[in-house]
Image (cartoon, rainbow, N blue to C red):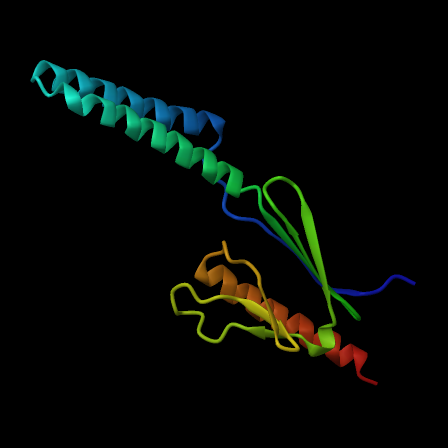
Amino acid sequence: MKERIYFDAILEPNRPLGPLGLTLVIGFVALVSFVAGIVFILHGAWPVTPFLGADVLLLALAMRASVRAAKRREHLILAANTFLIERINPRGIARREELNPYWLRVDHDDPDLLGCELALVSRGRRWIVGSFLGAEERASLAGALRKALGEAKAAASP
């Protein structure tokens, strides 16, 4: 007999621009920096030009880091007897935590507070989930988790 699933969600960060969009943004910034560099050289301020190139390089590195970070995933599954947190890092390596849902509670007291974490707490340990989500998404997730935990605990009680 298959165990009932009370909650199943895959959490993902918002996607950055696609490859074409990234190329266009970096290309536009490079073009603007090149034109600005020509203007600075014509006015005798040639020492400024390497900094314009450094700006484009730093933007490209930041965009690359953003694309890599967007590959993270969190998979939350609540069944009658287990709560599974599976975290998949940008390299695709998964780490799993199995918790007893009976002892689990959702800690998200002040969702309007900027940077308020959504944590799952069990027997003195905390697991932060959805750290890359926005405040509204975390509040919605907290409500859905509380509801699902309540249903699972009610079903497990005789």
